[in-house]
Length: 438
Image (spheres, rainbow, N blue to C red):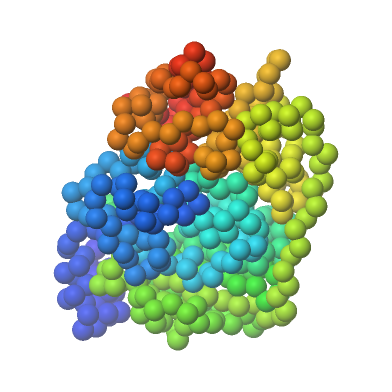
């Protein structure tokens, strides 16, 4: 890795020794509170250790040394937080997502930035999350579901195909481009072994191609943020410089943030000395008049049987009524999803309300994960440290009041985790087997 270190010394100058000190220290670990399901104050009261804020977003906090196995926490299972490297939250802050925006996250897996966008949209507008690698797209979908995002589309498309089909559709586009991963060397040993100057240069070419695809999906006047988790100028300033030369209808603009340090006037760089493993982000504006998209009308006439089932499980139809039945699944599509865009490799749009079986409809975990406790027709609530929640996560039956009959949400301190079916004081467990703890 001497060649990498020589490049960092040339890049950092007098700060190189400080960089080495941080690089030889502890990794930065962080979490981001998912405000779709839990407030910052509530998580602080439940998490069991002190949360110290990061400088990158209001919902971001450092995980103290010694805290382990957070992924097994019931609060993680119910989507109260997302485990995320602290500086990785910076790009979405620079995107400036507003309620009602239509947002494309083009390289979205595993889902940290997408779920951050989803929380900012708070059920409005549309989030389209794409990942070209199928296995990673499935992980992305799982995280979208866990974090309770009901207005998302998850696709597994090549950026060229997707952006041509979605031409001029989005207010905001995030390109968190695949990179040489220099900022992740301390956490990812394979990134170190794959590194070379030739690899850096190859990444830069691919990144420029992805940006030139992404621009097609952006509306006139829209905003695009390009980000990487690498330090190399070729993949950061170099890609932005070349993109601006090739696309005079785009300009670099101030994102109004103060974290990290400036680069290219308005872009931002983050080094370990700035409180995170490493990131680069630049906010680009496309010329023209920015126009807000009016919500699309529902294109489906809801099936009465589906509506009756909907009303039996949830109150006031919390996900809207843009319902379609496909492959025996009752799907509630996002309000701003154009169902005429068929032929794209879409893993899921919206939430799955249930599955039509022979003589009944079985609810789907997706809908309960996206619902608030007060939106469920029935719910039971247990403390995060309770024996009942531990048993539920293991896949066991649990005791519930005899007054509860039928499908019922299971909550952790008021945060919806999953569901079960109650009868005679017992709740049959419906938590998905692939999510259960051992």
